[in-house]
Amino acid sequence: MNRILIAALLATAAPLSAAPLTPAQVAALRDAALKDDYAWDITEGLTTEVGPRLAGTEAEARARAWAVAKLKAMGFANVRVETFDMPVWVRGEERAEILSPFPQNLVITALGNSGATPLQGIDAEVVGFDSVEALAAAPDEAVRGKIVFVTHAMPRTMDGSGYGQFGAPRRQGPTIASRKGAAGIVIRSIGTDHHRNPHTGVMSFADGVAPIPAGALSIPDAEQLQRVLKRGKPVRMRLLLTPRNTGTHQSGNVIAEVTGRDPSLPILLVGGHLDSWDLGTGAVDDAAGLAIATAAAKRIMDAGRPLRTIRVVWFGAEEVGLFGGLDYRAKHGKEPHYAIAESDFGADRIWRVTSKLGESRKAEADALALALAPLGIVKGSTDEADGSDIGPMLADGVPGVGLSQDGTHYFDLHHTPDDTLDKVDPEALRQNVAAWTTMLAVLSGGIEEPKRPRRR
Ligand SMILES: [Zn+2]
Image (cartoon, rainbow, N blue to C red; front, side, top):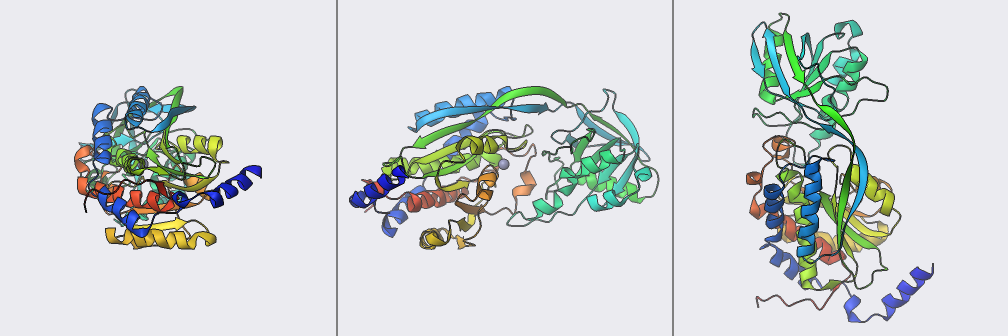
């Protein structure tokens, strides 16, 4: 109560410096960010010097050390790691082949938390389904002892909305198949490309359900298997997946700040996730995302001191179950946050802004949309924001902003060996940084002694 009173008094007593930036000042910061190099520098550095960084492994620990050094070198304050423990699963060998009627190899990868086959693999008949609903409706006898195959028809969409619905074979398929006594399950990768790259991704068996081997075929291989099944002859497959659980290990969130002039005010949180899947170098998912958020915070820091503290969080262990987001919420969820935002949907251009700042801050949401419009960004809902690690806090009612990237091509790369630096377009990255810089400029509460743009 006292803190709030004092903050209110300070706010009314504070001179001009507490005023929000003018639209012209915001525009100057936005346009300067269209020449940003910080985001590329971070993305290139992390993916080159660390590479793949699976949650809870030694690689993710190296990524944290890299992150701390980088954020300190960039001049951020209060750079620190908040650690937490988590169960760790690592990939082993992975092979699939059709034994009959048309012997040939298929390209497969294990899904996160998959069970293992014996070292010699398993040989079994394949039974195919068009959806998890069809699998769920099948009698147990039709599945028992067999390798289940589930396909789907995920479409390409700008907002990524297909992922929720068409991801069901990965998320629910293994549990349903195990309950029915299947020997294993292979799914059509949850993706939209036609490259021979399988898409991994996490799933977890429901409590009390025995883990079975669970893999994703590349989309061309899944279509091949479908054609083979359509011939109507019994199809036998050999499946070898040898992942294992290595026990409990440490992960952590890396946190850095641009200290505000009034640290008692609710903070702005921006971030992305530091861990990646192990198949690619996690350039698009999510080195680019954390780089965009961090570059924007750095650009505000270069311009002067914001009224509110900006906290940058590089979340650990997102891919395997939001461990970092949940740990942050447990440790900081009760602290007041002025707004939270996360970049974790690739590196393509931002096309829409949504927010959920509350009825009393409609003017702020409108000012934000207006300032973003010159970047080709459409005003979306003011009653909606999303983000993976920040999702639980958004659900708690913490105000948030969503800067939606164009996801048309996102699921071509998502969780594949093809998620590498060459897929990041530096121009699109800069448009992202400009949008995030604009957002921070509008919500910062004003920046003290902004440096004048050199261009006149
Ligand atoms: Zn991600």
